Length: 287
Ligand SMILES: N[C@@H](CCC(=O)N[C@@H](CS)C(=O)NCC(=O)O)C(=O)O
Image 1 (cartoon, rainbow, N blue to C red):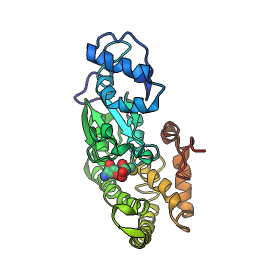
Image 2 (spheres, rainbow, N blue to C red):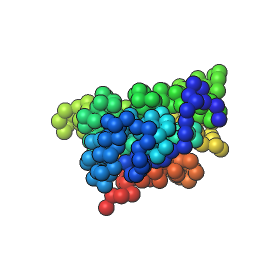
Image 3 (tube, helix red, strand yellow):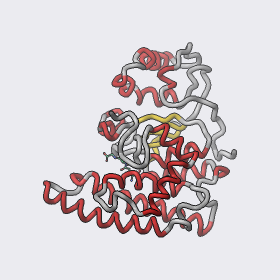
Image 4 (cartoon, rainbow, N blue to C red):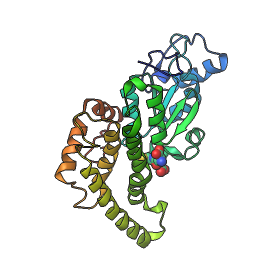
């Protein structure tokens, strides 16, 4: 694997391992040792664990607490089932160590001070690269693609590359905001009547974009080998489960596409790690 400009990656664990690691903290400064000791003491208490995540992120992204040597510089903040799923898929496709951390938007954690300190817009995903925040799905995907070119996240050059970026832009600038308007009408409209009108208009527009997605099946999307554009589309298919009928039911071609995504080996890892599926907004931990 080629990695442009980063030569210090080492194998490391998944979410929670920093908090759970019981080590001698060799190689850490005393303030870092104290921060990690605090996290270890409180690792079973979710609230404290989240409150200390910002502290932990900078330490954990630089040092392997079991060996005192540098580990991954990539810390990935995401929320289960959100648009961050596509970045999750990209990171797995890169086959590089990264630290996945949850900022649960359903629980409102994006508004909490510890997360605002990382991403002042209060949105997921955020990728910390050596402690520096990178936001916006297309930018993160392009960054990963240019840093790990051998992983072929996107076409390497020319028109195919530009066309793939065009789709990423359309998803981020058009499709995502339509779903946002439907799911969070209070964002743009006040009062029940205005919000109902907005939802109605958004759902009509969503119908049109779902139609475009369907038309692209077999060409840009849903090819023999699924890729990043498909993993981005997966979030929209998932969110479609809250639309009114008949949109919610999805046309047969989109249902089949969603089934393929759910069975795709790489994307299945994302769904399992996040504890969600594609046919509803439920989480596997929901009662
Ligand atoms: N343009 C942003 C949109 C990010 C975004 O809106 N993410 C949603 C989750 S899918 C979020 O963080 N929502 C929290 C909120 O709106 O408070 C991107 O492409 O990354």
